[in-house]
Length: 290
Ligand SMILES: Cc1cc2nc3c(=O)[nH]c(=O)nc-3n(C[C@H](O)[C@H](O)[C@H](O)COP(=O)(O)O)c2cc1C
Image (tube, rainbow, N blue to C red; front, side, top):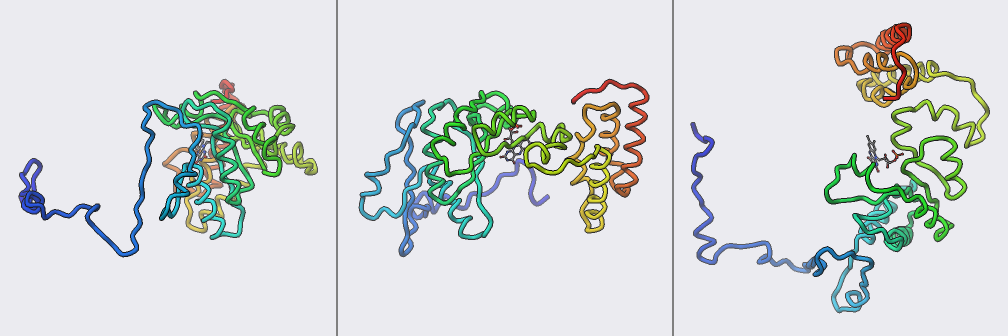
């Protein structure tokens, strides 16, 4: 065997390193090179409430200073320079245990200066240490009032709120304070709640439709995707909650998630799913939002 697990590998670099002939990244020199210095807080467990860059800015030969918000602002600017559609930013209200309002206010102010006019604010801190992404959507407390304050302080920006808003009544209450609402998990798990929103919130003419109408449209869409070479499962996985809250929903979802059907045409899967749903309904299976 040429290479085996545990086989000793001859070190070829030692002579060079031990005789002072090694080259490290810091030894390399290029014309017009610039250096990056990362500044870390000298205080363990301190909260960084603000960063004063005035002294660094005044120092000779300093090309640029990047603080966290400034990095986002530069990214926004680069995107705005490259595209003609609006660039929007979604962010949280703080990091870890820093619950100050000043942090998110300064962040929005800095990023707005780069030309971003629409902010979607998840009204929770992001706890970067010790929480999974899922826990980070549930454990840090919701503080909607912080987002309302942003709208008061930046009235010309479009500020949308996100986090824990689920019902039309809650949406309406939020719209008294801010410009828009982003609904996350509820829209995914229980999409039928959105059926009346065009009418309720955007003044659209009333349309009578039911879940079967929506399902039919989705099947047409899946058929077009399949014809274009896209697997229909990439669409169906986002509508698995369509019948949630009605009898037979679980069986319907199971059929759409059945990998054995992945090569069947969407209308055939739909037929089987509806059959299973009606069967589940006749068997009087419990209705639940799961
Ligand atoms: C499956 C899943 C995927 C998500 N992916 C993203 C993402 O890519 N980018 C993002 O900013 N938020 C993402 N989120 C977070 C949501 O946009 C939203 O901020 C969060 O669910 C809180 O809103 P809610 O309480 O209405 O669910 C995701 C959430 C879920 C459940």
